[in-house]
Image (tube, rainbow, N blue to C red; front, side, top):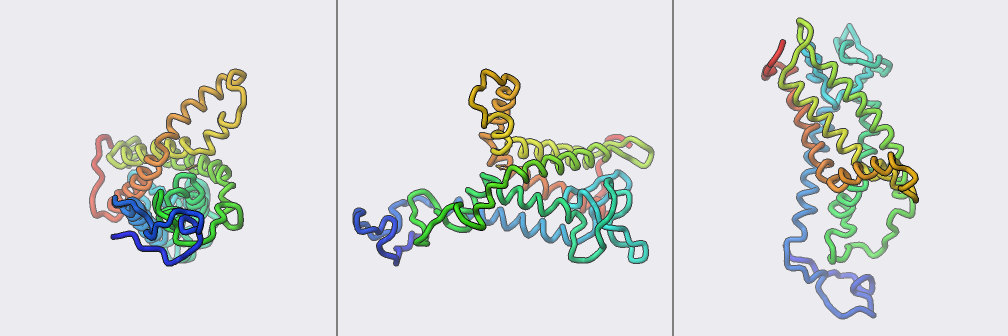
Length: 279
Ligand code: FES
């Protein structure tokens, strides 16, 4: 793909005061490759997650108490007549939502998780580039003439990210509870491959959540004198370390979420059986 020549005049690098270069960019590398890969990755996750969230089946393995994170917490009322809604044992925190086809069983957590990732500083950087092309790559001028950044509605709302971080911590606690209570078998305690997958997924979700930029700010980033706050300074140091890999954790957790859900779906539907170590 070669860089198109901009048909727009008099803005950005085509301003009258700038050196006269007709090309949109002089970069000769494949600068469009990274945004393309990001778009494909986002599309794969969004399509998979949407389809699974609305399927309303194969989310719970009764024998071993495996619950997929895409259906947690499961709040939809069980309907005995139609045998639909959340299976009562899968609802660890009660049931109060109506059983309608357009409401995912995890309708309480999914919107917040979506907003948490949507307002994440890493994802913003990623989709501002790959979807909105603002800019598509460094030193590649933007296709639009005006730019207001995050100063107006709706983008000014991105500043609420820390509140979604707090909610994400609560949801991570719920996922942790699900993972711990999944060490079950019909005879009591049990341990299988599903447990390994659930626990690894939860640990990585915690790593992604704790490596959040808002978390870094909250634990110590906003302090002025670290010497007066030794504990918070230590916490800030640890979070900062994780934060350097925030992008990696963002992608890894998209992968482990899909993998965890897919594995539980296969076991729940009877397509494969869980590899059991105990029980
Ligand atoms: S900045 Fe990415 S989750 Fe907070």
